[in-house]
Length: 545
Ligand code: ACM
Image (tube, rainbow, N blue to C red; front, side, top):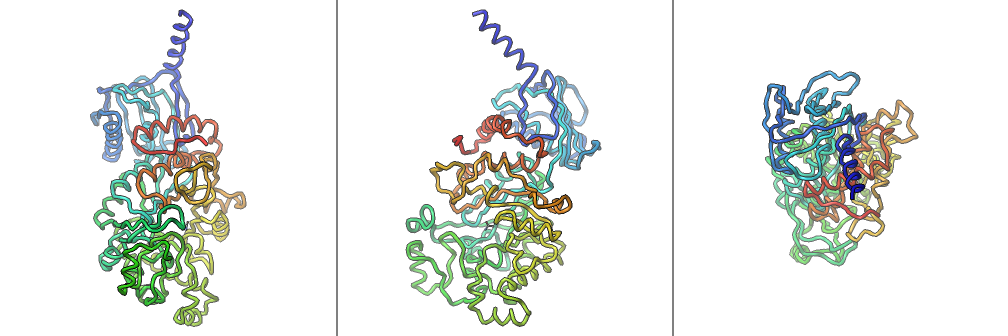
């Protein structure tokens, strides 16, 4: 009895001066001191300027949403406070860097810029207990931190399945909670065009509606005969871009070309090399409605199955005008320096069969259809550059010659990224082998996923700088990105199941110094993080194997 009392006493004592600190992503430096600070209803958030006020308000919203109380925001320094101080110069840290100090008197977050202060606030969130309470104990710590990579991204494919604005915002919140800073929004696909373009209303009237999807994993068990529809109005896009920007996240729009363009072609068949050829959807996959429509004379359909399709944009003046018009509206909506034009998986079959394309290849002195793809992308790059932006494309844009200022997203492994960095082009690493979040997380996956297997340990172990690059070349690697292709993610719960806990591992790959990563520690930390997913009401993958 006495011994057990003693043990409890000792344990509680130990806890009171050495509270566990489990921060994801792991900071550059964490010193844990004895004692702690208790956030209670008397605690004040002290801010110096409007940027810090916005960051304090973000913390307040988090406290309100997940702990059920808010704190007053004041300008004058008081006792029992959490102080936010931007625009401090913290020796040796990047502009996104910050320091966070907590002791029994309070917390001080000093950012090298408002972004740094925002990240410091995210670290404070990681120090909050995972149990709801009115007295939140924060460990005494001394944190100094900054990101390893400038580009810390995640992509969401809203073409295969449409997700409401509310979930897009939630996804952006998830990125912010992991100190990620780029949201790559994959807006157009064979199976759906999801952004309102005022000059081409049929893109959404026709292109955002498909009549059905295959049931189960490809080739599937027939059509579900259920429409999948939806698009974002320009007002909604503006709202999302602002929402992200308030969280220091840049939204990169992707408008796919020349492939993955069936939905646009369904809306404007003249974009195809063969406007009068019917869209091919196998009999065992097509919906009843589409079958009927084809029988009644409809020619082009929004695709209803997954994969790569041969009906791609024709490299005509009509298409280039169309794409320039679309990009005009896109660039007006997205202030991002980067504009993504896809460029992946564009079969050359139609271009080989097309007299126009063959003539164009001759006329321009191009080698072949790959040269024509390069011509296509380079032409779009000129337009994008003329508008002061930089083009990003998937690694296929290397084939036939890289556009002069393009950034390569290396997805078919790292070879494309290595080649591009060696040509002094900037690179974002997104290899399917390590950062595709549509792969299974376990060999015993019961949910439908796409073939690959990428468990938590594999993504955690990813190193974005390939060893083939020397120090100079390595500087061209801006960072890395996780990709969420949604063929088999029909709803937000499935997206959450696929991203968590892997997104947390990716955030540490992107943020933390290589030497601070530790798989064994991460396994302990992720168990606490899973409790945070629980607080957020987020679904996540729960098995350990
Ligand atoms: C891709 O996964 N097709 C970029």
